[in-house]
Every structure is written in C-alpha cells, then in structure tokens.
Image (cartoon, rainbow, N blue to C red; front, top):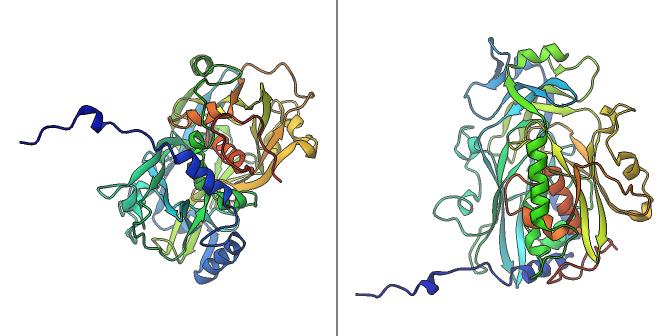
Length: 477
C-alpha cells in the first residue's frame, strides 16, 4: 500500500521566475517571430483577406431583434446575447433615466502565453468588431460571450477556447472577474484570463493569429486604435508581476487605510439604481425613432442598429444594436513620486452600472462635450492644459467595439508638478503603482478605463522590471 505524500509535497506557490520572464518579454520590442515593423502589414493582409462591412439600418430591418410591446425593451428573439433596457438613477445632486445594456452572462477574455527561446509570447488575434473605428484591431486569443461559446449564434466554435475552460485548461497566470463600462452596461463582468502552456506544447496557429512579445504589444499601445480594449484590460492583470511589492510595502498611505477609504466611499455615496422598462426613459427625453433612440439635444449617446459582414468571425453576417456615444472621451492619469516611489491619483468613481456602485477610476474621466461650463470635472482643465514635457503618454483608444459604435477616448498620463492643487476633493487618493497592481488580483476594484491606463503605464519603456518599487517611472524614449 502506497503511503500518502507528505503534506509539504502537496503545497504549491506562484512561479518565482515569472516577474523576470515577463521583464524579458517586455524588453523584447522588435519581435522574434513576427517583427513589430511587420504587424501593420499582417493586419492589412487580414483586412484584405476577409470582407468587412458595417452599415446602419432601421430597427424594423434588424433581423432577430425587436421591441417588447409591454416594456419597449429591445431584445433578441433567442432571449440571449443582451437587451437594451431602461435605468433609473438617483444621486445626492440629480436624478435621471437612461437606456442601458443588460448582459448578465459572463464572457471570457483570454490570452494564451507560451515561451519561445526563453521569451514569453502572447497569442493575439486580428479581430473585427463592428463598432471599432477601423474595424480590425489586435484582440485577445479568446474574446467571447457565453452565448458565443455555447453556440447560441449557431456559428463555428470559438478557437482556442479549450485552453481556458474545461479539462484542457492550462496553468493560470491571471483569472479575475472585472467590470466593464458602468455608464453603459448594467453590472457587466468578464473573466480576464492569462493562461500559460508548456514551451514544448504544440499549439496550432490558426489564420489571423500571431505570437507577439509583451514588449511588442507595448510598442503597439502607442498607436491610435490598434490594441483593443479587451487586450488592454487583460494585460493590466499582469501588473502584480510587473510592479512587485518589496517585503515591506512602501507607499504614501498603507493599503489597509486605502481600502478603508474606498469602503467608506461605497458606504456613504447616496446613489440608488433600479432597472425600468426602456419605454419609461421617454420621461427624460429619450425618443425612439425608426433608426435610433436618442435625446433631442443630441447629448450623451444614441442607440442604433447595424448590419455586419465579417469573413473571419464565427458567424459571417448578423444584425445587432450598438450604443453610439457623442464626442471623444478623456481618460487621464496623474502620476507623481513620493519618497522615490511612483504613485497614481485615482478617484472613487460612482457609475450606475457598477456592481458595487463605486470603483477606482482615472484621475479624470469624462466626455468634455457633455460637460456644462459651470460643472466641469475636477482637474479636467489642468490635464488638458498640461505642458507637453509632462505628458508621458497620449494616445486614442477605442472602447468595446462589440457594443459601442466609434466610442473613442484620449488616454493620457501626465506628471504632476507644483501647479497641481494641494487640496483635492475627498473622492481622490494616491495609490502606489504596486498597490494598484495588487488590487487587480481582486474583482471590481479598478474600472476598465483605469485598467487601460495602467496597461499604458506598463508600456512605457523600461530596461527591466525592478525587484522592488522603482525610484522613478521612466519616460518613453
């Protein structure tokens, strides 16, 4: 009879070499399989190889979609995918009603990782999304709703799904539920996953997929509308390994105090949210016409329907609604050193679609065109007027192209100087970069816009990831 293994032999720990391995991948910016200067041509080949077309159409011609007679909600005949409903919101200062996307099922955003010649690479996909400004962008290995990967669309199986779910699932580097846009989604979450396969494993390379290093993806993050939102949010979950804390955490404020501050913000914000029939949003000016739901003043966003053709998707053609925001957004992160440790200024931001109402958002997040002259967000004008020498990062990225049409924002990282106000509103707090990265091991702390900015901060060139918090955030060269 075989004796049971000693309990110590059953214990496991995280890969201690992972930070150094990721540092090697981040330092490799030219590429070892597909050179970085060839990525644009590779994307263009995919664009030319498949017919892509997105056209607006009236709601009455959107096959499979209809308005419920009783509620006015817009939904699919299968009862799956998502619905457009109404939301009633009440805060300390205002009340409003608005359309909202309700998609209760949880999807998978997964990136496959594998070593080639000792350098971790990440499997990227050239994926078309109907709302992307340029249609085709770099996407995760798997980007699929539950309706997609359970076959509700009656299309082809989702490629590489077996590496992220089921018996063939491989080593998990990151796996955490994270929120999506709380202004347009009602309590929407997706699994953000990075999964590693053995270096000697045979992973078939499908059409429209390629292996890139972390450094290559970082290079591409400096380009407008190339790396999609889902890649950005998944890669932000690698931050605990890219900004590891030392044995004694160094920060302006201990993590326990910051978590207490955030809990207090969640407990004291007076905000009530309730789902209502879409028809009831008419009381706040939302009008349904033949081809859009919109406000007469044209503010905020509209709801439209589109016809889509995409030759490299699981289904080659379909119809669907999209939210179409009005105006370009601004998402800005202010950075500053305290005691030689880089910190970022975050705000406890309330959005009606968040599960916990409040999450950590960027220093500034708004659509300036929607702001009243007398009610502009704190620090918006400070960020927009920053000396270019203090701007470390400034790139336009699109939001979730599967649900939003031409939704773009200017993502910028700005170094603080003596002109930054010393007295900040109580909803603002400084977090060290390792503290923020550590929170991404947990769900629903950091908003999707803040996660994008952290991914962009990670992309600023560094020769290596230090074993403890760095003495400065390196400027891009």
